Amino acid sequence: MLGLHDRPRGSAHLLSEAELEGMVINTPVPFYDLSISCGYPKDTGDALPLYIIMPDEVVGYNDTFCARAIGDSMIDVGIMSGDLLVIEKVREYYSHDIVLAEIDGERLLKTYYIDESGDSWLVPANPNYPSIKLDGSKKVCFWGKLKHHLRNAPRQSMQSIVESINEAKEFLKQNIVVSEEFKKLVIRPGCANKVVARLHELMDEKMKPRDILMPIRAAMDSGAIRRPTWAEFISEFGSKRASKASLSDYTDTTKDKFSGDSQYQTMVEEFRQLIAC
Image (cartoon, rainbow, N blue to C red; front, side, top):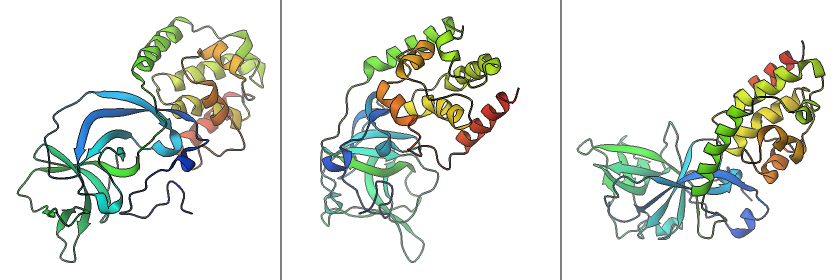
């Protein structure tokens, strides 16, 4: 069975309840309360995002946002009206990618296709709708490609969490003194202040649990600190920075959460140098 990130181009993977079961719902994702046309283009206007919380296995590492589908022009690839679309922002698009495109200010979901002549098209997955040739006569831009779509996603509103994060930032600014409890985690006590201060700097302004907890895991894997308990973590960073489930998930050394991430590798080397004092 293909994994979440292994589906072939052009396929629209509907995440099932079985695949979602057991995932940690811990990552805030912008949700635009607008409908993405799967029929003829419809002007949706500008909309401010709300936030929903979803598993990081669904969201992935690139910038991602969600919106709703309407219409039936993509029904032959399994996309139904009302589905929650998980759109990934990417730098490059390839033939057969299902993309969110904007044509003269109107947004729609179609399959991007390059034919044998090199011409580009936006193609529906329903014979009742016409393909659209991208011939330069209209202003076109791509917002992202479809990563997944869901019907019964485990998600919850995050409007209040945004306020909590802002409160947490103010709390951290006012509580710079390193707690004695967290200092005990540092393997070399003489380096404790430097290590914990750097953790604060690396976490500052971060919102996603993965980004907030990456420095903790890097410090662990560098040998700078041991794995913190929930009580030890909140003694220094407060409970509003991450959830207990997120901390447990991202600091579990049996899980390779940051493989291949160059930013993470840089952090690991930095913490190694800090404890070489």
